[in-house]
Length: 116
Image: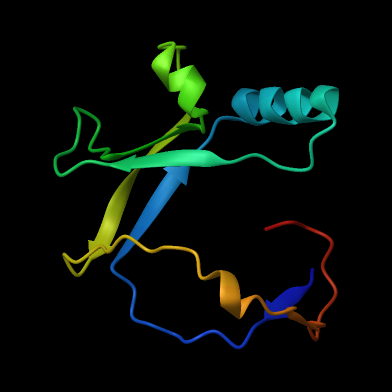
């Protein structure tokens, strides 16, 4: 496991959320990425003010392009979860193109090949 350290400003979090993704869904995602020869995948997360009958207010799906959204293509839902802490203030953050920095690699004291 490799930890990355960057020189970014640390700010207080606005919310902490959990997300559960089933094993079958993870397998489908990995198989699709391998077939498309892609390196990763982007998700869209929706955080609702109220929960559903299972106490979940977080939903995730594979990000869609503008064209896919306009064509009303169905979403590929990947998981659900809940918000377990919030300060009530979530802000929209825009990418800052000027502050790209290479992360510094930090080796952990204990070697562990497990992803989590």
